[in-house]
Length: 157
Image 1 (cartoon, rainbow, N blue to C red):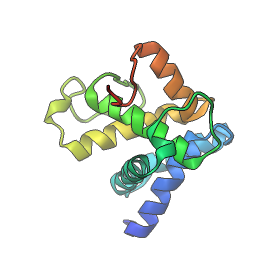
Image 2 (cartoon, rainbow, N blue to C red):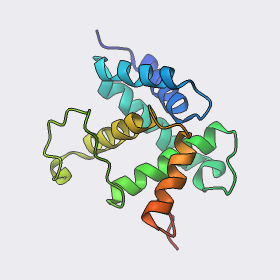
Image 3 (tube, rainbow, N blue to C red):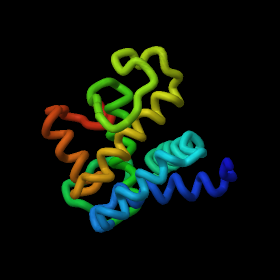
Image 4 (cartoon, one colour):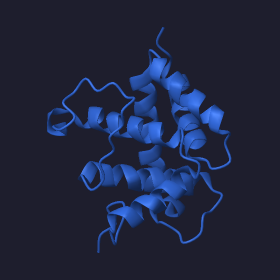
């Protein structure tokens, strides 16, 4: 049974906040991700989560920029997602996971529609965060160090 748009929006926000948080219980994160994978409304929930990230990242000054210290703020957390997804969209970061069943050709994302690509990237990010102990802020920091990008998240001079 498909969920209502209101419920999908709520679930999308909940996933973003729960999986991105450093203080959430590891088992709860794994359960939340596993529940998404078996949901009949997975695409609708991923679309709602992506819309929430996009809207919050664009509207909040706190979310637009990477701060030197971690703020205990929902908007700052969502901003980390926005920057990581932007780098994935630009092709600067590529996530490959073994447990996600890839129906598409993994090496050719150009054949995917923009919404499908965003869903795929967000699902990969959720999978990684379901077992990552430092939350999305720590993951973003680690990715910035690994990629050596001066301006992470499309923030170019």
